[in-house]
Image 1 (spheres, helix red, strand yellow):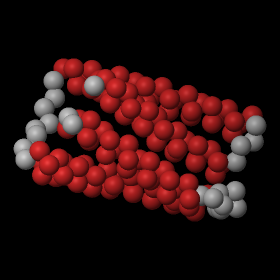
Image 2 (tube, one colour):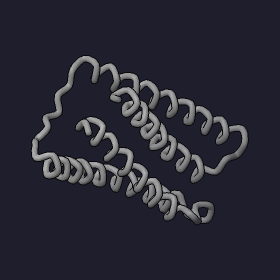
Image 3 (cartoon, helix red, strand yellow):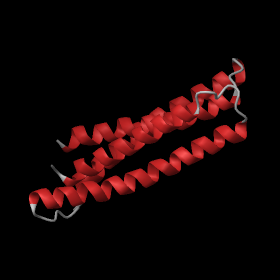
Image 4 (tube, one colour):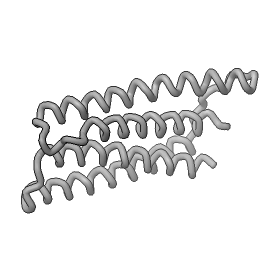
Length: 139
């Protein structure tokens, strides 16, 4: 498996684990204070970053052990174009979700806790969808 696809899978798995952890912590979000909700969301983002780094290392070590070779991560112009496509998709998804959330907050009295949760999860979902686009483009 290509190193870029492996690293992308590590990012997807790390984000999904962090989202699941946050979801389980936020089961009582309607009764939680904004400080507690913000704390859980910040911890979830931190967990995601740490998991992604650990999974990158583990996947690359396992791949080197299995294949017996060290694979270098080399970027070319095509890789940069794929990154830009993925970034555009992620930005569009996140932008639409922020505007939708702000409309719901302003006109339909959505609670601020729910708004924070939606914006955070929209960032994760946009990132995951863009990562799947990168996997598709790398194949």
